[in-house]
Image (cartoon, rainbow, N blue to C red; front, side, top):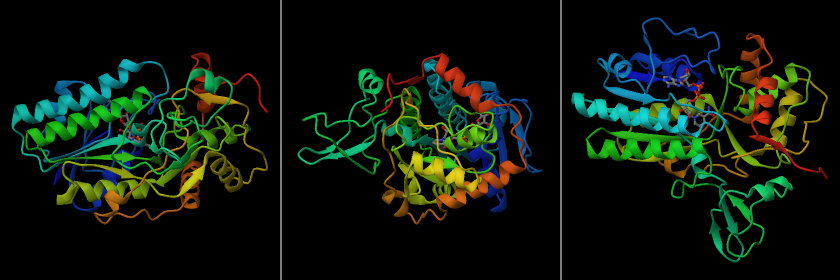
Length: 372
Ligand SMILES: NC(=O)c1ccc[n+]([C@@H]2O[C@H](COP(=O)([O-])OP(=O)(O)OC[C@H]3O[C@@H](n4cnc5c(N)ncnc54)[C@H](O)[C@@H]3O)[C@@H](O)[C@H]2O)c1
């Protein structure tokens, strides 16, 4: 296949490019070299033979150049942030995806598969079980609740404590602008793909971690944030009480999911969760990173919280497992592989502190009144 990878200069994209080349595909990359990810605004190492198009997924002419000759698209370019610029998520992630389909239809371009990147963020606060009222998908925790550090959502019916469970694909309920934009991305892609005969799949990635995750983009990506703090002599900052449950997934497992849905006939028309299935709290993760870096310190759990964060979320991966996908890497391997890579990639500026300061100044990261 001739595959166009948007966001191919980024973290997941660069690994996808390598994997596609090793399977004998021809690859082109469309990437704007966004300043947040590439502060030098320069191409990272891209393997020879890959056609590079510097352009923006919101620009029709850039798509037209990049799509030339492509018979498959892996659409990964996206705006990801924790700022209050809500319209930008819609502009880049949703208008960008709609424009892709608009052009494919307009040009009657024969396409064998489109894969779009979605996110676990579509699950909002996550899925829970109430002893009396069964499955619950609570609304966003209120500002008042967060301000007094009552972290766990309660049953929306009776107010009882809830037991977190894995999120399956059936019930997305995003609670921040990024999650909303990702659900809309999927809707455009799967609906327009089905309507116009453009076979499409969506992947709802959990938290993907590994080498090449730009340390400059310190607004998200918990591992790079922990490592950034520790490298600059601080304790890793943990939001809420650190007991949030997550599933962290190795980049290699994310890439095998892309490879699978790009070719599997039964993947068409569906969204798939991609997650390790290994449930870890944020605090456990911070401690594992400290230990792997040989630093004897406690994580900084000082009552900060981030608006729009999910309390507990991890993915039920039965749907993609039914196609033969399996996660293969452990949390230990995620941390080790990232640290091995980071050792050869000097931290440079203190991106993590700058990102935290900006999020605090804009009110995205807040502090509870009192810490117990
Ligand atoms: N990394 C994760 O944990 C994770 C989790 C869930 C979903 N995702 C999704 O996976 C995809 C890839 O994420 P990533 O972690 O590799 O991100 P990344 O920031 O490392 O890479 C994104 C790339 O897209 C490019 N880009 C950004 N805006 C663009 C635009 N308007 N036009 C063209 N290129 C643009 C950037 O320059 C960058 O090279 C995204 O869609 C993201 O929402 C990632």
